[in-house]
Length: 367
Image (cartoon, one colour):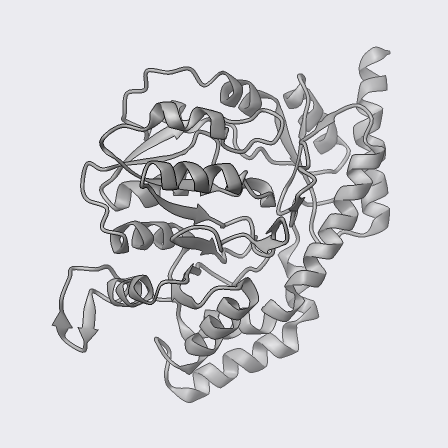
């Protein structure tokens, strides 16, 4: 029986092994490990790739959200609207800025925040909106940017899963006041440890974030604000510089696999792909009313799956805030979704096998 893991980071590292080892050795031999030339080079490369004026490397995607909010002047008790279906670090980033997260229900066909339900959650305390380009597909940014302008809200894009994704031909991360990226190892552009970045077109925000990530220092030992310790180190920056030129090729391969899934899966529901989006397919999500049985069936046949995400934000034990609205779509969505293996190194043969096993589940149940 085949064994297909949900992800396989080792294969990618083997392919780039010599280049990565050389880049890491350069850093080690330089004797300079933080806030050095390797970081500066990657920041310029990623800003150029994404179409932003500035990029500030930080320690994680979570910190990127926190630093974005702090740089925008969000204060304790300010409300920040976001989606009810996301990786919980989105919420952690908001809470770490001492703001109050306000979840909004989703569009059940895409899993993304439902723009039509945002306005009803805006209060006098609302200061910002964090949209999450979940699974690699951009949110409806035309509607969302219009809403933010109407209500004078700051807009932060959580692009942790969206490196290289496009909305009407424009890169994710170029619509908000600033945008947060994660380079966690499993991301489309992944480091070999925790890493993140904030991108922005504002020189003022960039300056504030570079100070806040380094204890609020404007100059050495001169602190104009408290800040935090959140620096993208030289080793991770050098690794990301090696990988960045491959990102578009990797995303193209992800799309090829996703197209096979979409065209050939017969017994499950795939998420809607909006025609104006270029999805980087960080994850491929299917829906089935017997999700848990399907997951076990795939595991029994050597295929590892995961759930992104099994518990909506408002139902997490860590979420202490009272909510007085319904999240009907989010609850049903979380109960029926399943993530299939999808990564650039997945072979055509493995894709064929996954499709055949998923499709055979329905016929097995009918027997």
